[in-house]
View 1 (cartoon, one colour):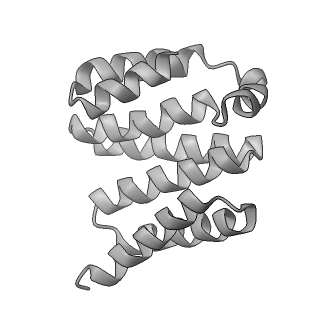
View 2: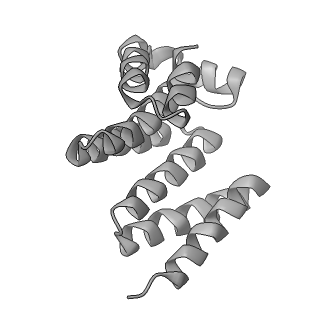
Length: 141
């Protein structure tokens, strides 16, 4: 799976290769198949590629492109109406906003993430929402 290789390369710090694989995954995304793939794998591959591409672009020094990909990931996850894909995209969006030190945007994503994760019974993502709320409290401002 292209998105998995791109994500692994991102965490290994090979951002150029990660970008190549994630962008390839985005290009290969079949919008009509995303919901079925999300139900099969737990996360829509297109959302995964877009969300991690945002962080890869940030690390490569392309903040505007990073924000665009993050917005695309959120929009795709919302359109799919797949809660696990959406909480994942919200977490990645919060992380990108944290990198930008945009506290209000982190708060917005954290609140949405925590609300949805709590309603859906996703304990990992409830923890992520609490983590982001803790970061907000810890940041001077």
